[in-house]
Each structure stands twice: as structure tokens, then as C-alpha cells.
Length: 91
Image (cartoon, rainbow, N blue to C red; front, side):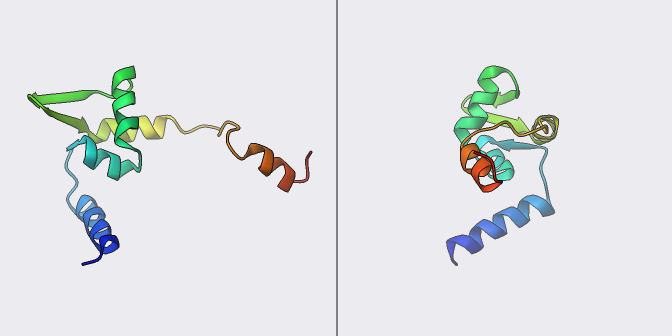
């Protein structure tokens, strides 16, 4: 089985039977963020880490969804903004 097919099947499994709590690795795949980004969100207090047993961190998928949906807003200028300005006819 190719790697791409395995990724697709894993995503279909997540859609078909979503679990409320998931590991950091699973949450990273779910929202297309890196595990480090999720750990930073936890460190900043923007996302709650649940530790049911030592060494296991679980993320509440509903909380993650709310965090992502709540952050929707205008995109700030960042990488590529100068290129975008030139393409749109500005200087």
C-alpha cells in the first residue's frame, strides 16, 4: 500500500468514527498543524492538555475545533506579501 493511500485511509477513519480525545500526533494530522505547534498552544494556555496517565497527553478535539474556528479573522501580511502586492499592481 502506498504512503499516500495510507494517509487517505487514516483521514477517512478519522472522519468515519471521530473520537473526542486524541493524541498530539493524531490532533496534528487532524488539523494539519505540527506537533510542535500544538505543544506551543498548550504551553501558552490556548489549548488544554489532558493527562489521564503518565506519559500520555490527550487533546479534546471539540476544543481544538473551537480554537481553530475562533481564530478566523483577516490574514495579516506575512511571507509573500511583497510579491502579492507586485502581482496586484502595487509597488
